Structures are given as structure tokens and as C-alpha cells.
Length: 139
Image 1: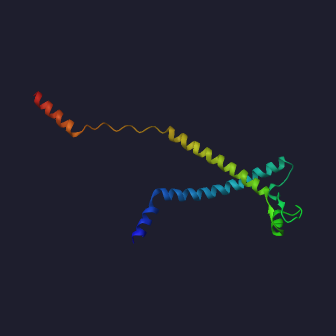
Image 2: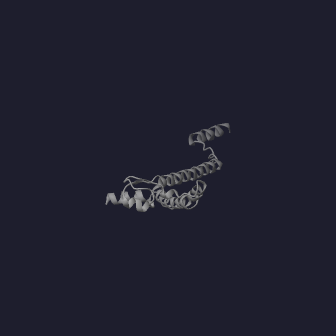
Image 3: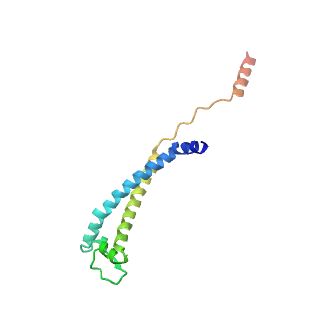
């Protein structure tokens, strides 16, 4: 029963729940970035460099030509899919840049928060007692 209680305590902590939410949102955000790169950025880059589709760039390792689509070339034998690597690298750079901007924004918001007001000074009990004695002696 002790381990079950410890596990329940561990799971109910805010940090674990925050981490789980972050992982789920990160996975969904990764899909958005993949779509952005694959469906918008890479076609534009391909158009700039002559209408080429980066996803089908590969070097065959079995001696066959590059006339096949990447999926068919993979079935025929090993390939070095450097076009896919370029796409994933661009996706990583975009994702890293967006995360950098988000962290920068959060840090700016944290700095903008006003510092909490200091708590009013509490006079120790012995000082109050000495003041009462002093005031009583003056009378």
C-alpha cells in the first residue's frame, strides 16, 4: 500500500500534470509545424530551386537509378533519403525558432510583473514588551 500511496502523491503533484499537458500540446504543435514545413515551406523552396520536390531526393544504395519515387526506391533497396533529411531539418529550425520566441515572450512577461510588496515589518514580542515597560516607567 505504501508504494501505491507514493505513486498517487507523485502523480497528483502539479509538475507532473504540467509536464503531461506540455507533452500533449508539444505533440500537437509538432504536427502543425510538420504540416507547415511539408505543405507550405518546402513547396515554396522547391519552386524557388526549379520546381523540385525535396521529399523524393535520394541516393540509391543498390545501384539503381533515381527514376523511382522514394517509397518505391525504399522497397527496391536501401536509399539515403537526403531530401527527407532536409525537410526534417527545416522543420526543426522552424520549431526551435518558434519555441525560442515563446520562451522570450514568457521571460518578458515575467520581468514585467511587478515585484510583490514587502510584508509590513513585524516587531518582535520582546521589543514590544520592553517598550511597554519603558512607557510604564515614564508615567
